[in-house]
Amino acid sequence: MKNSDPLKAPALSGFLLAQQKPLGWFHFWRTVSVLSTVPFPLITQYIVDHSIPNRDMVEMLLYCGYGAALIAVHYGVMVFALRILSEKVQLIMVRLRSRIFRKLQFMHFGFLDRTQTGRLLSKYAFDTQNIEGAIIPILTSIIPEVVRSVALIAALIWINPWNAAFVAATIPIFAFIRFRFARKIERTNREVRLARERLTGKASEYISALKLVRGYGQEPQAQDVLDHASDAYSNSRQGQMMVNQGMNVVVFSMHSAINILAVCFGAYLVIKGNMSLGALIALVGALPVILTPINLFAQFNIQYLLAAESYNSIKELIDSDYVEQWQGEERPEKIKGQVKFQDVSFSYQEDGPPTLSHINLTISKGESVAFVGPSGSGKSTLVNLLLGLYAPTRGEILIDGTAQASIDMRHLRQQCAIVMQDSILLSGTILDNIRFGRPEASEADAIEAAKKANAWEFISQLPEGLQTRVGERGASLSGGQRQRVAIARAILRDPAILVLDEATSALDNESERLVQKALETLSAGRTTITIAHRLSTIRSADRIVVVERGRIVETGTYDELSAISGSKFQELLQAQG
Image (cartoon, rainbow, N blue to C red; front, side, top):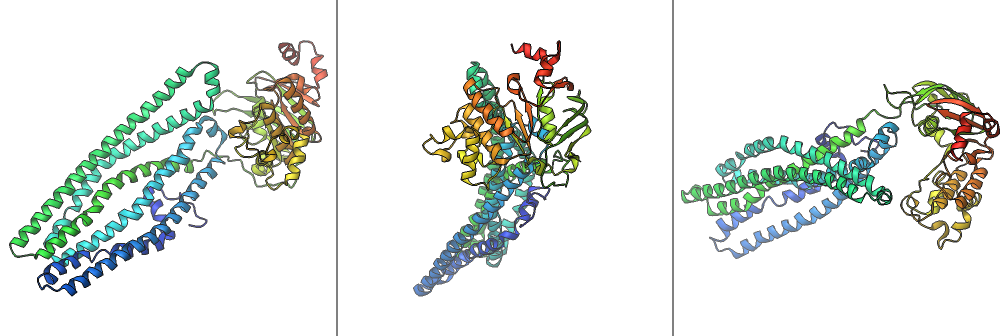
């Protein structure tokens, strides 16, 4: 499986078959374990038909010893085989989850923007769990038990062909039962998966927005939304359970009926003298083992179909071609930071209204440019295009004179840094977050970056300093502290292009002062693009670009634009008082 894609198979059955090569030793030892139990009915028959009538105690103890030895072999080898299986299956699942996340990292941002995080988490966690839940029982139980049943039927043929034929004749009946229930089970499994994705999506959305919900006093509304999604999931699960239990009842009833009929038929043969008592006892002992795969098949058929639906769900994601398709191959050793928008237009929807229209703008190396304008004017979209998160509908963007479309986007982004309005910190230590953009950086480098970001003052006062754990999304830090850690992260990265996305708009005055000072240190000597809400924060910008309705309407310095009577920039200033 090395260097292979675990999701090439079009169906779960193909996926399972593709995993058999690394499980070769498991199958060998599990087969040895299973076959070690096959002689039990023959030993039983011999003791009943020969040792007991002949009152041969030595022979009986000898055959009992054979049986005990086989039991020891069976369980000893089985434990060894299951250890191999556990290691291999977990390796398979690690690769599967890795494949899913690798795909997500290259999905088009349009897909990520419109897909709830909870739905993707459902695929990553629950669907892979369902697949794991099918792999282990099928490999540990179904396949070995089928091998054992075939071997036992062969033994029964040697003991008495009629009973063996009777048992074998029941197999098509169970195949028919599976066929009858399969469609219903597949339908209910799909309903459950979709309902679970909706529930997980809503739960993820509302749990992350609890502060908003409570701030607006909308707890009852949020409760209703989640309860409705939970009820829908519960109803789908109830339907699934009814279908599954219906199949189980039919299968178990057939199992019991076959068991009784086989014993009665065997007793009839004993009475008629066509079968020995030892053979009947051997049949009674072997029959539950032979029929075990039937019970397991009913149980694991449900798990298999559930896993098949989960596999299809993951395949839809993996096979999706809605990925970044403008990945170039050029990897400039060092990007200088010149950016040129050349007649760029963009629309988020193929037939929708344009978000940007005919943007022509050149940003020189080391220049500080601020985008301002009303909400929805297209400021953030310009940055999204620059970072290659979306591709222009028309025109092109040049980086140092090279078409952006021909540059490896990952390489470009590695030479950029972004500080957002609500900077994201990952759960872990402050040091982990500062070094996120440069994992190989030393602790001394991280401390120097923290000092430049005006973050070292508060970090050094924490009991654990850089090793302080920040919690999910940096919840243990204040807004200003999070921003300064994010700035330290950007400083340590030493980017050629810096993007500041309203980095101070959500802060109090003191925090804004500290963050603004850190941003000035960070911006020095590098191309800086600022999306500004508070116009007072961009006085020092080399140039201000005013965007309205997707078009550039004004450009100039702060003093130039504010001095123009009736200018759009002046309107924005007056609106802020």
